[in-house]
Length: 65
Image (cartoon, rainbow, N blue to C red; front, side, top):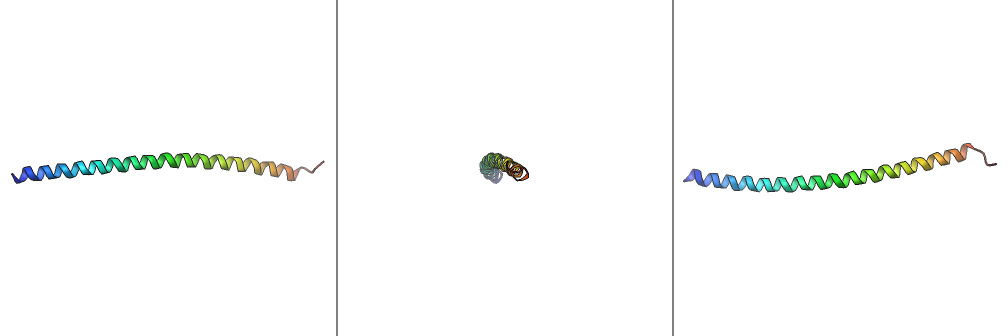
């Protein structure tokens, strides 16, 4: 009888841990998706800045005519 009770308690604990793991995995996935979007936005901003810097360098190197 004790073994049956312990088995049931272990199953309940395992099921609870599985639920916690599933929630954590979903949170990690959502965090990774948001981070990927933010990195893509930062790369786009960086590319725009590099293009502006190139334009400024061209303006400075070429005298006004």
